[in-house]
Length: 457
Ligand SMILES: Cc1cc2nc3c(=O)[nH]c(=O)nc-3n(C[C@H](O)[C@H](O)[C@H](O)COP(=O)(O)OP(=O)(O)OC[C@H]3O[C@@H](n4cnc5c(N)ncnc54)[C@H](O)[C@@H]3O)c2cc1C
Image (cartoon, rainbow, N blue to C red; front, side, top):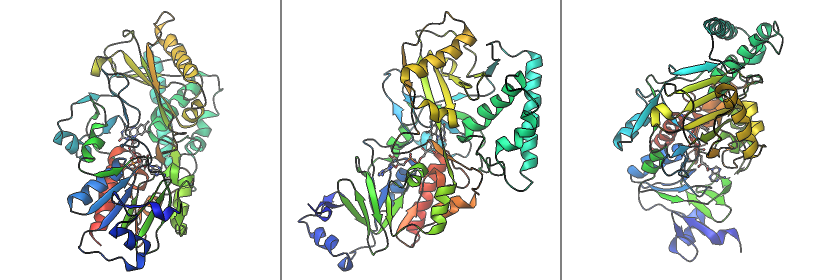
């Protein structure tokens, strides 16, 4: 049967309905009120924020989502009934002035604070750092960030690795100094920005802004925020968009099952999905938008939660850090013991290592994590009773964790990604937020911005 026969608009199957005739003859389409008909592609934070705002202003909104759940890169697992776990975003980074704090307050969402001040760092053989080692680490930190600051005022732009090269080549690859450098690059740069230091731009890796305040996580999981934002919205789950025909009076959003028509469409597809060309734009997107999509980077941060019968690590710390032999190997861990009283550790793998690990089996990943934990805590520690592992790079609906600025990209490209195309197509999503890319609040604010653009037409 021809696709047209499956056309859906705002939940009404048009086939045989009065709207159907309009849909078949888009030239003859007339609005009977000032209500705008809007399709939002993606039920992540940016899409839900945009949809909720437009719905609140009285417009007809449908959210079209490929997955069978809402939230996108906010995804709370309920596998462990006594401890909801976040596979995607965990923290409101910087609670002061952060719009997500207001949302969390509105629903009285219980939060806990974790702090980098409560961190313990272990050397490669698993001992807590001595004072001398702490001093050496601090010295390398000053040299690395000093070199990066200098490089930000010099042309041309190069990768962070290239900036650090004159420092790192002074040391043998098996030396402690070399490991300290890698530890800083992995723990403080790659885990935060998700891109490899081989590609992260020295000029722009940290071009975003930050809110002040604590890092707070949700006791019931970050999922409470998309849940709240989705209230009252019409959301079509399991609708994988394959094409958007946008240069016509009505925009046509074609999915694997049906079609949706709208006056305006907001695209919140993750950068990874746009880069992979999984959704065809007809006509093609303008050149500057295509360049922005190609040049910005989509990085990786993966999580491995391990649940133990009991804690065998310090009750006092929130973060355990490990100066690994190989770059990026289980460098950063979060303990849920102090904050949530749970015998759970969360290990991170970012950038190239995070991507490579996705090809490993769960058992291999857990065994590798356990080798590090045994080095730190001794060979007699118990085996985990369960685990949960993410694989964001191969998730077809995100193809990465969040965006970063590689060499070749400049912040202005995020404005180009965000720019509307006429009155038809609007763009949101974390990657389109020049100030707060890579974050949940950045996604949320981008959704509000796109909604405002439509309201101002
Ligand atoms: C592991 C990890 C940890 C993170 N930690 C934090 C943190 O602690 N704090 C923080 O602030 N941020 C964090 N982030 C970043 C934050 O999660 C994201 O920036 C934010 O959730 C992105 O929202 P979005 O709306 O832009 O995109 P998404 O949430 O990805 O929404 C896009 C939606 O589009 C849908 N979609 C994709 N393709 C199609 C298609 N073809 N058809 C229909 N629908 C489609 C997707 O399924 C998705 O629901 C983290 C992210 C990850 C992955």
